[in-house]
Image (tube, rainbow, N blue to C red; front, side, top):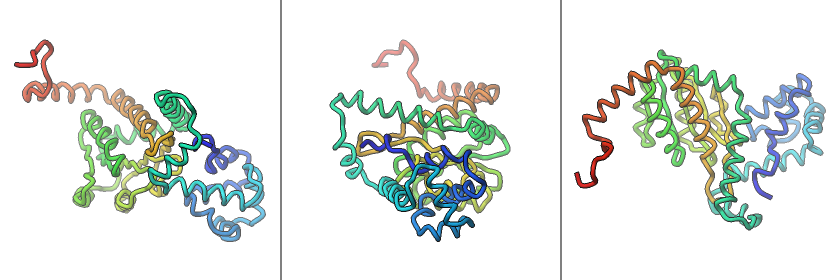
Length: 295
């Protein structure tokens, strides 16, 4: 069975949350705050952590379609295995169920489905709140990514740097500790972290949180541990028929953010762009239209 065709535990919990009692919603919040670890202990431990009865745990699981606590834990363990799986394991998961269509169709269809589901699951109010933070001139923006997501972090940085001042990309090397000396209360950290979650990314999030910065997280459907520190978390669908995950859904979501922030700040963006174009002309960074290849 393909990864995206399985119903995630988090999806089940959230889909039925409106029909739950206050104690059941409290239980769901505890599960999501420390997901998936909170559900991997005994039912008694989970009930105690959430300050509810074991009967409440059993009733909530029944409402969300689980036959019982063992089935619930089995589903969680399966997701943990997916979270920590490397490229070879991911490919093995897909190759047993690959359809016969050409890779262009097979891969692109899953990627498009990921993008649609990711956007469908975004709360518009949360999206607008994030854009408000990026548009606030009193806040400085720090951006960080990991070994793979660092490329997306660079992409977001280059656009936001053209749109507004005081945007900084934290380098992957150890010198990011120097940049954190400048983080102050009210600044914004935009962090990108997908499975297998990186220790350095979590540490950056923790240090920025201690300095009372607002943390925005772009992650996958299993959610990086940074989500427990984040003001806003955007969880994208990343699984595709490949040994590597797809970042396409995160990129689309980020480009939506860039487009919205640019529109809101257009007057100042136009001024900055005009100045930037003058600098490009002086440095001759781009070829002039009609310029021959040999000139």
